[in-house]
Amino acid sequence: MLRSMGLLDSMASRVADGATVEFRPTGSSMTPLIMSRQLVSVAPVDPAKLEIGDIVLARVAGTVYLHLVSALDRTRGRVQISNNRGRANGWTAATRVYGICVAVDGQERATAKGKVLNV
Image (cartoon, rainbow, N blue to C red; front, side, top):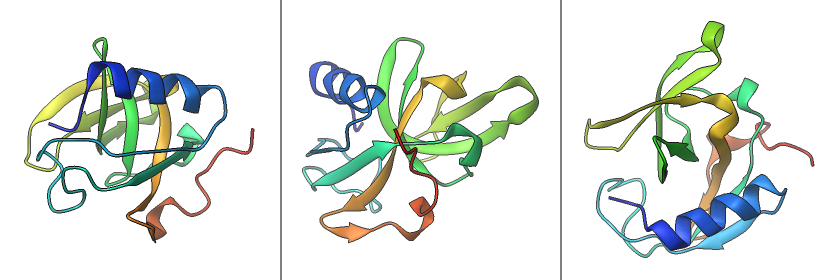
C-alpha cells in the first residue's frame, strides 16, 4: 500500500498549503503505475477537474493515500479512492483530495495536465 502515516500526512499538508512536492512512497498497491520507492511529484489539484484514473493524494477516513480516483459523485462533491489492485479505500470529500501526481520518475503524467490548481 502506498501510504506512510508520517510521510504522506506531511506531504498532504504541504500540498494543501500550495506546494508541489516530491517523495518516494513505499508499497506495491499502485504497481505498475508507481513502483515502490519511485520518485513522484504531486501538485495541488483543482477538484472540479478530477477524472476517474487520476492518481491523487487524498485523505480517506483519517488516512492519507496516494491512490486512484475510481469513481466520482459530483452532485455530492465526493470521490472514491482505490488502489491499483481493485481495493476501494472509500469515499471522501473532493476538498480532501490535496494533490494530483504530475510525474513519476521524471516522466510527466499527461492526464494531470490542466488539473493543477494555481495557488
